[in-house]
Image (tube, rainbow, N blue to C red; front, side):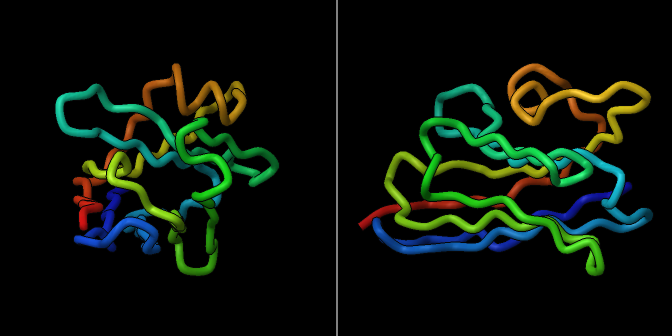
Length: 129
């Protein structure tokens, strides 16, 4: 599966953005999906992940209550709605997919420990006044 992340840009603190992760070559129905962020000078971290059945989500403490991950199966797209953006949300955002088969893991595990197989190219989000 090929992933394409889009929707990044330059916004002011308090603004909202919606990132999209589109797939080609396969639908995303049977994949765990995660959004990962690499802030300047920091390691990449998983910030929002969803299991393949959409039964479970995980959010990093830094984005909990402000970001929402969702899936549109018909469009083979996963979204990251980002509200109340802060300067510390600045970074390159990547989406990553993996079938995680035949075992299953929690969304938390997928975001923090698992190494997804398929990655998009990243989209830059800059939050600055």
